Amino acid sequence: DQQVKQNSPSLSVQEGRISILNCDYTNSMFDYFLWYKKYPAEGPTFLISISSIKDKNEDGRFTVFLNKSAKHLSLHIVPSQPGDSAVYFCAMYSGGGADGLTFGKGTHLIIQP
Amino acid sequence: DGGITQSPKYLFRKEGQNVTLSCEQNLNHDAMYWYRQDPGQGLRLIYYSQIVNDFQKGDIAEGYSVSREKKESFPLTVTSAQKNPTAFYLCASSILLAANYGYTFGSGTRLTVV
Image (cartoon, rainbow over all chains, first blue to last red):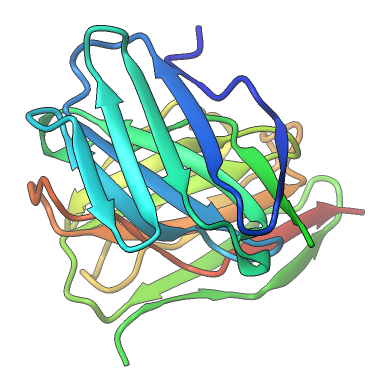
């Protein structure tokens, strides 16, 4: 059973508007949540993260929201730029992450000019 | 510059052959990981190692083997027992028990069975 779900395989957003990527999880033991950005044929790059003791973390154009009661994580990008076009993975772990990250299947974000 | 180096970038394997993918890091990270990515799929954990000379199976370890003889190196062998080895393989490393620290990934190796 998938512990981490990204239900939108792709998302198209106009340049300058807000992009909202969503992620749902089932394992209540997860205590740290991350977003990665990935271009084709490259490794993922870390974008932003949030611990379970917070509900929001902001870094420039990127904001991550965590709703623990709903087991829902989201990433907001505003304003969206052409360079944001990539696949975005949510990932999470419990207990310090030594046993590896659990990833969603990814959402392909396409920024339209 | 510190980072993770995976080699080769592209690898072709004949049926029945074992192949080894290299992963080296100079970040002084304790833990290293191997993930596999298939089209339309997330990253799935193959093996991981928290310290030298020790490693654990991940979710899809069958048909793979690893070694961790040095802190910097974590090679992955794809054996002939792996029935569907064509995929994009990613190596990562992290500081152990650093709750606010993400993993650092290499640039990947694309393995194709011919």
